[in-house]
Amino acid sequence: NAGVTQTPKFRILKIGQSMTLQCAQDMNHNYMYWYRQDPGMGLKLIYYSVGAGITDKGEVPNGYNVSRSTTEDFPLRLELAAPSQTSVYFCASSEAGLQFFGPGTRLTVV
Amino acid sequence: GENVEQHPSTLSVQEGDSAVIKCTYSDSASNYFPWYKQELGKRPQLIIDIRSNVGEKKDQRIAVTLNKTAKHFSLHITETQPEDSAVYFCAGPLGDDKIIFGKGTRLHILP
Image 1 (cartoon, one colour):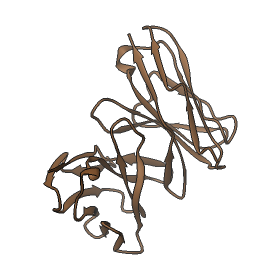
Image 2 (cartoon, one colour):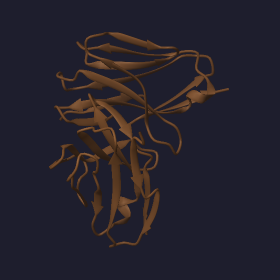
Image 3 (tube, chains in turn blue, green):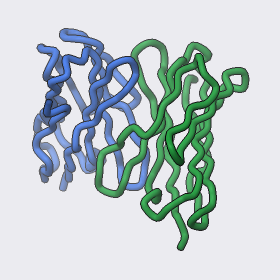
Image 4 (cartoon, one colour):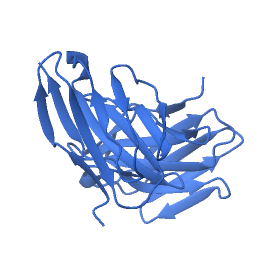
């Protein structure tokens, strides 16, 4: 099993550009999450999903969108990137509360 | 509102001494209490967890204790070693679906 995979690993965006961060898991987990981690800080929940077709907002959803068309994939969309969205983004999936994290995407908005 | 509070934010201990990190939670329905370790530049990884039907769980040098009455759970690391230096996060569920992390504790092991 590959576990949770994320692409890209790194990305530099210009202010106002858009992009999609990809996340996939092969463990057949229903629950998936997107977190952002600013330098030296903790993990903040952006969006989560309890199954295909179902998504819900976390603590910091503004500026982001998600979709969950399949159990495996949970992409995060950034529209109109802003410098405040510079962060490391982690995707995770979980089973019975136990979370498995992807390797992260380091995003810089300039 | 519902949250997870973690203390201290920074902890320095002499190599070989013990370290204790504490988290309090507000959702009395919580029944799963994990601890994650994050090394610099890496993803968080689960190091130990406990469910609400037990009060303590040990795995070699690390242990987690749970006090459901007081709504807190703690991570204990004994005989600390340089490789224990990292950021540690507790987490707790909010309702049935969300998982919220504490703000983290940066642990420094001093030589």
